[in-house]
Image 1 (spheres, rainbow, N blue to C red):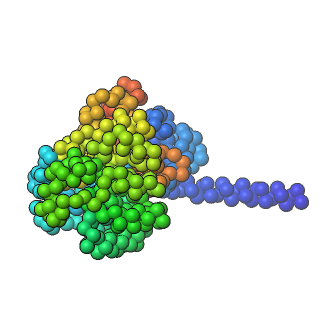
Image 2 (cartoon, rainbow, N blue to C red):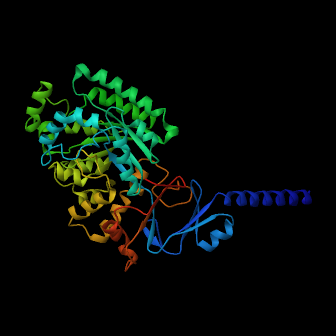
Image 3 (cartoon, one colour):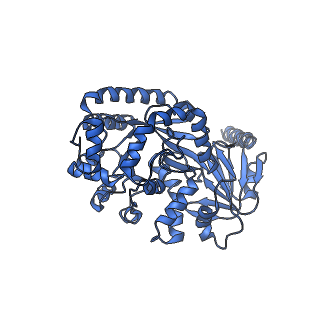
Length: 433
């Protein structure tokens, strides 16, 4: 009996060693100068990965454990980050450069309506692929695509990045709401068929002023029952607040002109209470009051912060200090080229760094790195955003211009001095833009 047990033990031990040896044949060991782990920067750390992170240790120990692994050592002053996540992007207007009117929200919206058909017609797959590549070059390995018509889906299945594909619901007119909702469901179903192509099906609500409460509740119920990521534009401009609160202001003329109505379909409280049962990623929230932000915090919602878009459309400044105090998670996102001049995530981080001048520089820089890595990954339940065993091998390698004087400065120096990352790895594969 004892001999049989010993034989079984030896067999299992040999079998385990054979598996480890086989695993090491397709393993890569990556050694950079600094590695970002648990919000800190470490030296003398290496990562062993296949399509996922298999081990984190010293280079010497990993070479012993995986003797046949490919060894990849980068040049000096490199930083290994989890792949970056841009939570909110509109690709459909990526052809815009100087067409749309900036400065105030309603004049911008008027220019969108006036030029929409031409801009969408000019935004073919080549243009949208270029937009995806711009994000890729800045280290974005996952992005949230807000899709009004589904025209971006083909490009999103072809880009190497993972895509949270937010099928957007719009329609405030009761007579057309059912038709638009049926179209929304059809687009959602189409995106579900692309899961094997890197698509994560999701739902977006356009805004409180543009979605009828009846179809809003239907869409939210779909998100709850199917456990789909949910996003919504919310209180982006002062004009939106005036319309929802008082049915007055610049939106009054807008709705009379385009929709022959002077009545809002909902109000602020009714809208946010509709999301009580599902944590939602609200975009902008620039005009939200402290009380409304507190309500979002109570219901475990989060916010996508788009500082350049808010500035260009004259919307104001999101008080991130209030979000920090209330414990509201926030991501930093570029929005689309309809309200921005680039989709480079570092441009957005720098804008946020300068906009929030009251925030302590080093501490806020670290918060901004979290806002494009672990925070959105946790909120959207992604297996990424952290350098941790079992997470997807999605990495962005940054090379600093010289050695930082202190590891505490690395986040700040990364934001200040990076335009393009040195290398992007998605699912263990080196990706070139």
